[in-house]
Image 1 (cartoon, rainbow, N blue to C red):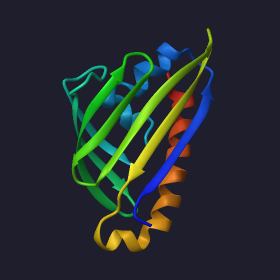
Image 2 (cartoon, rainbow, N blue to C red):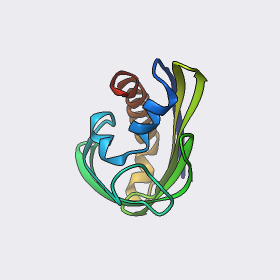
Image 3 (cartoon, one colour):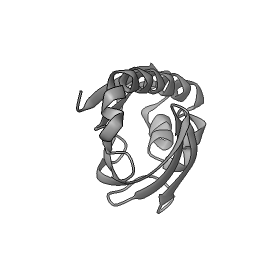
Image 4 (cartoon, rainbow, N blue to C red):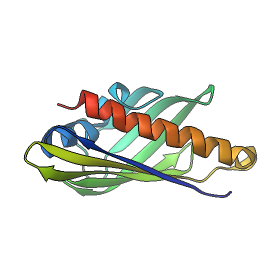
Length: 144
């Protein structure tokens, strides 16, 4: 397995604007993303093209440090990011309004394991999928 591709989505009983305020503000990631110990976005606030991040993440028994950049933003709707240092990954966060009081959140993640991590890719995929699903559950409970 050379590339791990996963996604998770969940309907959230909050407005799209409330959920966007959480998923598009990296400083709030530790409150809903599994394993995120620290997240430092530059500049702070809602993402925009060029926002950079420094993340400290506990995953599979180790601490990982990554840096990333936001490439594309459709304000209030979706953004795409990719790593620039550390784990080779990219993804997207999307908020889809369902009605005036709820929305659907979709998290996408692609990881390209390197070196010996390739041998563990099937296990990594299961762990990452579990974490992403848990992230959507926590997000549904912490938005707003």
